Amino acid sequence: METAQSRQQAAQPGALTAFARFVLCGGGVGLASSFAVGALASWIPWALANALITAASTLLATELHARFTFGAGGRASRRQHAQSAGSAVAAYAVTCMAMLALRQLAAAPDPLLEQVVYLSASAFAGVARFAVLRLVVFARNHAQTADTLRGPRHLPATVARTPAPADPAQLCHAA
Image 1: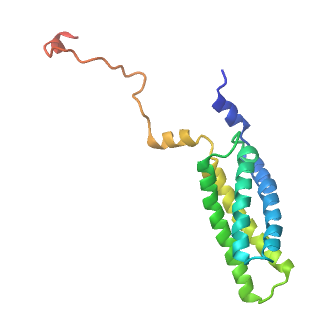
Image 2 (image 1 turned 45 degrees about the vertical axis):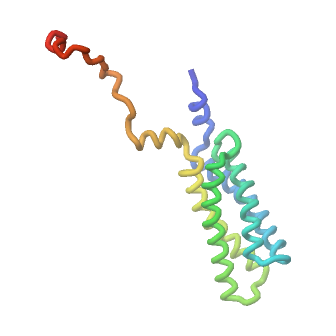
Image 3 (image 1 turned 135 degrees about the vertical axis):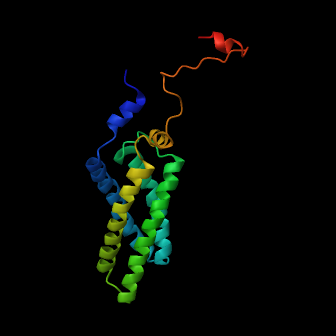
């Protein structure tokens, strides 16, 4: 009899398939985000535009990764959104540092150069994010892995528990 857990495990993609889907979903959202940041940054400061777009794109990407990339079989949980947000904060820091470095090197960089730097930093952060999402956020058998790390919970089936006799004198006669 096949359990729901074994069906879910069978539906979960391998590392290469998951990475290809991650690149498709995350890369698509990231590419759209890069243009959105550029457009929004013409009205508000770049760091604020990046923060707003990062928040929105992280919500969207986490849902796509839960449903499609890692085969979690449904919507992302609050825990998964929170953990994904943590990795997105790190990605945000990487993209901000890259853009600040660019601005230190060129006072008025060409928009094409800005896109290349931003997308390169995003790709670097994306590879790290894939590892975090696969190994932590959408890890297979999350509860089972935690149980394995904690060790066995019960006695082996071969050990039988017998109630202690009410009268200590019966201990000698029990055998």
